Image: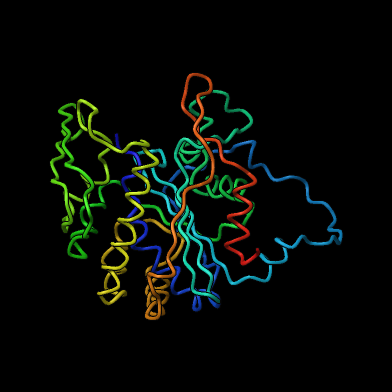
Length: 316
């Protein structure tokens, strides 16, 4: 019920990080702050015995990655011990392009030693090996480095939207839904049309999938909802640009967890003055849904993922 409900909160913070990439270049790889989660040893992440380095010819993509000005940050929305929203934000400091890739929570990712079907979904990784393990999983799927992370929990959603004075969206249909057994009980009632949603209604908007009798909702399920939420991200970023970004970052910092300090983020936000939303693109991890082991999985397409990565790094 709470799938992909933290997308916009993460984006509000992440664009400040991304747009400050010129400064980030000189201060990258800050010392990580202490994490509150528990790291669990996982055979997937065990380091192999170091081997003597041998010279090898780099591929065109490897050369592009090595020489690029692209910075990748993993943005994760948390629901208790699981990652409910997973996004990879890539910012090219040279071109100013900002790309946000949504990774479906049901994306298949096999790990040795984890044979239960539910553990083969990417959203199960955080609870077993923490954010660093999830970063490595995304690196494995995308075959690119992930430099930093930002996480946010469910309770931050309403606060952050209210901080920026609401977000304008075009609600595609009348959203009505009730679940008295949710904790707390959920009631969604948002009329169709263009309107500015406050924190409470923004949260309802992002949680909605279909009404109780399933006659109204996104035709392509969660993928349709991801698309709607990505439009919400763009609107939230546009709204945030109307404020002094250091103020937004300072107000939202207490609601997130990141390996960047507040002073680091304020420094990065100060360089965001030249950003244009025309350079913002959103996408969904290329792939398809498939039922396996009596569960719905999302299988990514390695070839299309490679095409996406090449486009991020300026290759034809």
